[in-house]
Image: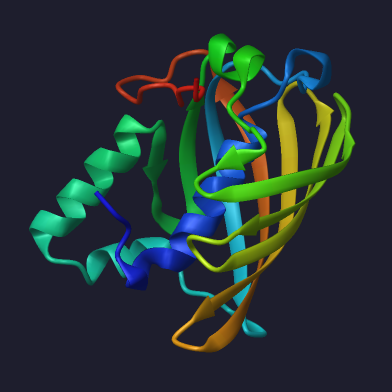
Length: 182
């Protein structure tokens, strides 16, 4: 199911979550598999963005249920207050899914080590250009900072996002792990 245009600002953070959840064997971050609580703060065009769950509340009950089910199937559960839950399996972390071409994106890394990644992405299908940096200070914490320009309706919108992730435990409950792309 394609993402509705009104939910595009939520898609960029989810792509960033996917970026952190993935690596090649030689650059794998030393983070633990399991359930992660991810605090997300976004600023759009210089103003603090509302919690993405507020956008979900404005959807019809049917559309909201479909979106929540689709996200859960992909290993993400949205919570209130900007805190999302993310499930990473050992396989997800080790095999990774961040490749040169993902979601119509081309990504160039200027740095990719077990402790820090820096990248520039151009996603032509979604009209998004972004720069990001992820740091992995220890096995139970990581931070991602991105700055993205999204062209929508002929106008550029600049989104800056900071995600602070903290490992919550081994058990993901009923949340499926994010799956590496083949």
